[in-house]
Structure formats: structure tokens, C-alpha cells
Image 1 (cartoon, rainbow, N blue to C red):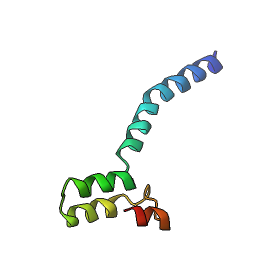
Image 2: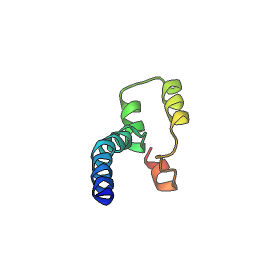
Image 3: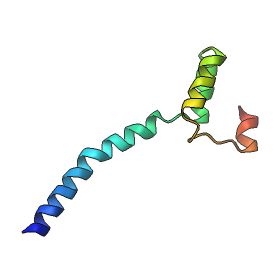
Length: 68
């Protein structure tokens, strides 16, 4: 009985929290999103603040930096 309850609760937790994790990935700042911000003529200071707030998803390889 306890195993069945645990399995049900685990499945329920996955169904509840999986969409939240997916939406966080969509909000991560990527190189492509930075290019969109630049093309939208946002102030440089705004773009820098966005980069400083979430640098984790940025690709800083030489090829990516040249593309930007």
C-alpha cells in the first residue's frame, strides 16, 4: 500500500513540477535572445543587466562571440 501511494505521489509531483522546469529553460538568456534584444534596439545597459542577471546559458566560445 505504501509503495503504491509513494508511486502515485511521485508521479503527481513530476506532473506538477515538470512544466515549471520547462518554462524556466525558456526564460534563460541565450545568445540568440541577446541578438534579438540588440535588433530590438534595447539600450546596451539593459542588455548588460540581463546578461549579468543570468549568464549561465550563454555560449562564450570564440565562434559564438564572433557571430554576435
